[in-house]
Image 1: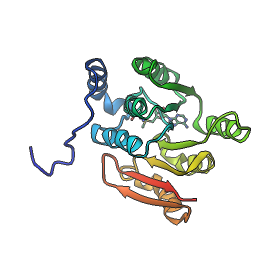
Image 2 (image 1 turned 60 degrees about the horizontal axis):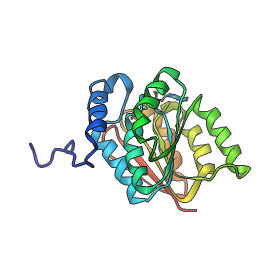
Image 3 (image 1 turned 30 degrees about the vertical axis):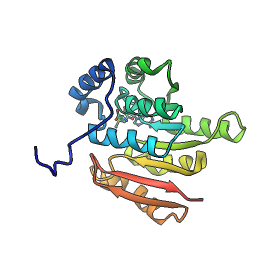
Image 4 (image 1 turned 60 degrees about the vertical axis):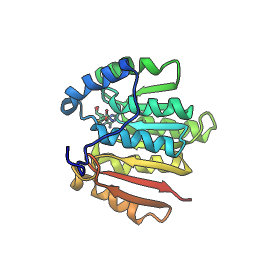
Length: 204
Ligand SMILES: C[S@@+](CC[C@H](N)C(=O)[O-])C[C@H]1O[C@@H](n2cnc3c(N)ncnc32)[C@H](O)[C@@H]1O
């Protein structure tokens, strides 16, 4: 193996059962638009490095990235909300998440991301829910700017937004990229990892 191979991964050691689920999901990765393993490993590490305790994912699919998030939240003792509008996929994800059910509080939400984000914002505004400290954006690329409008309202200062497909869907995500680079309340960087990720930290 080339020492410079960016696809090399040294990830956490998952239980045999979890590793089996991950390996099986990796076989259908293209069909379900899942992260690749290096991006998922990065996402997992970032949650731990930031000691994030309240994570929101926009775009669950069959739960591949969710498993990596849950593994991180098991360590940080956090909780997980994830949004998917495709019921069939959400059902598969719920099954895949079951193994972490006793360790992490999770709320898989079915619905259009914008509608669910509106609900979450309302609940946060009426103190029924706390703000998030990590938001992972991985749904409709054309809606990233709209997701950000809500994400900004429900993210704590010091919180992180990680957005996927920044380089593979450059034309669609360009308005989001520009918005974040021009926003002085955020520090942002694009990373050439997987499909290209943009990491943004809320400063104020
Ligand atoms: C790229 S996939 C997510 C992959 C997942 N994060 C992973 O790595 O395992 C995007 C998912 O977002 C869902 N999606 C797209 N637009 C959506 C919307 N407006 N509201 C809710 N879900 C949406 C799609 O059905 C799809 O399953």
